[in-house]
Figure 1 (tube, rainbow over the protein chains, first blue to last red):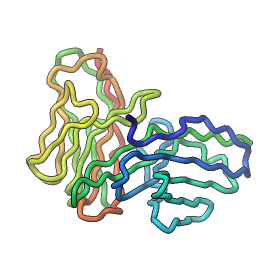
Figure 2: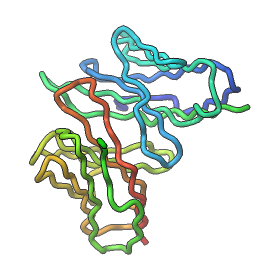
Figure 3: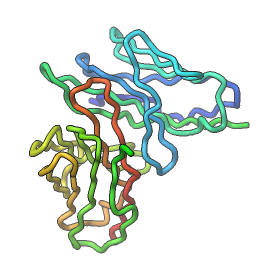
Length: 113
Length: 114
């Protein structure tokens, strides 16, 4: 059973497009959620945390749906520089304390001119 | 500057020759973790540590050892490297006390075992 699942893509979109990624998680007690961005052969970097009420950072919007156990990332007005792999990360909860961080395999985005 | 430092960045070695990849963080983070990344397989966790002297196996611990004697350091040891351990390795750390604390990554170590 995969704990964090993402559509691997690739998503090939034109500049200016709006693109959305979803990520599902299996542990209903999961506590924290993040989106990371990884450029080819570089270290992953935090794009944004995902809060219960949803949050926005410029062209990026993250949403959490606890009932359906998924998080989403929306990118508006895509830029060439958005081309990367987007990783979904979920922090488990075990008992009353934090557990491990679980990574999805990532969704590859390619923005074309 | 707050950072996670891995060394070396690149390493080419031969089968069976013991090696250690070092990881150090200067942010007083409780949690540290090692990952390997291979094409098509995403990031796979090798070992993690929730605090000093506390380590746990991740998804792919076979062939690796770790230790956490001090809070800042979390070395990855390959006692007898084999070619299937050729990979890109990342170390990462975060605060454990805050649920929304993000993971900070090192720059990666590219290991080739011939």
